Length: 247
Image (cartoon, rainbow, N blue to C red; front, top):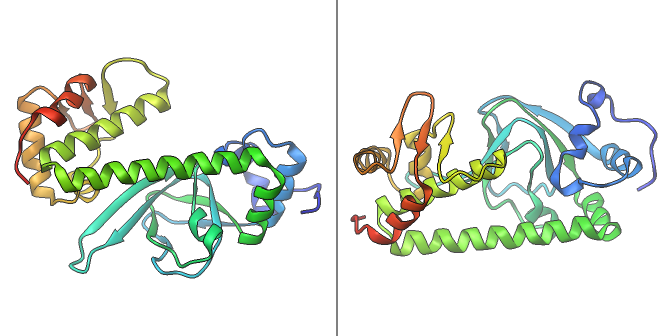
C-alpha cells in the first residue's frame, strides 16, 4: 500500500476518527490509516437491509464505522439463529478474507450502517505489515472459538431456562464492559426482544416469555418497557448450575 494524502470522498462527512475507533486499527499512524481508507470501498446500508448472504463468495473484511449489524443463519424451517451483534468499531467477515471460502452466515443491518469494505489482498498486506493488528485478530478469533465452544456446551447440556440465564449473563457482562462498570448488577437498555433471545439460545419466543416470567418471580430479572434489569449477576450465574428446567 502506498501512502495517500487524502481520504475517500465518502469520509468527508465522517472524521478519520471513525477509522481510528475500529478496534483492529487502534494505534496505527495517521498515514497508515489513510492508506487503509484509500484501499476501502465505503457503503451505507439501511436498517433491515442484507449486508452479506450466507454462501456469498465475496471475501471482503467489513470495518463497521457507524451503526449495528447482526450475524444470523436460517434453519430449513425458517427459524432465525442469531450468532452475535456487531457495532461501530468492530469487524465482520474476517474468515472469508483469510481462507477464501464462502460466507458461513448472513449479516443484516439493525440500524442505518456505514461500513468500510477492505479487500482480501489489502487485508492480508495489512496483517503482514503490522504485527499488532495480526495479534488482535488472533485474540479475536480465539475469543470467538471459546464463545462457540460455550454455546455448543449449553445447547447440548442445559435446559432452556439455564440457556436463557447464560445469555442474559453474557449480555449483562458485555454491558458492564462497555460502560466500564463494576457493579454486581446490569441494565439492558433497550431490552432484547423475546424473539431475539429465542434466536440466540435455540428455542421459541413463547418459551422465552414463560422462562422470563419465572426468572422475574425468582427476583433474577426485572422487566420494564425501557430496560431489562439484572439485579444480581452473581445469583444469575449460580442459577445456571442450580436450576433443572426442562428443555
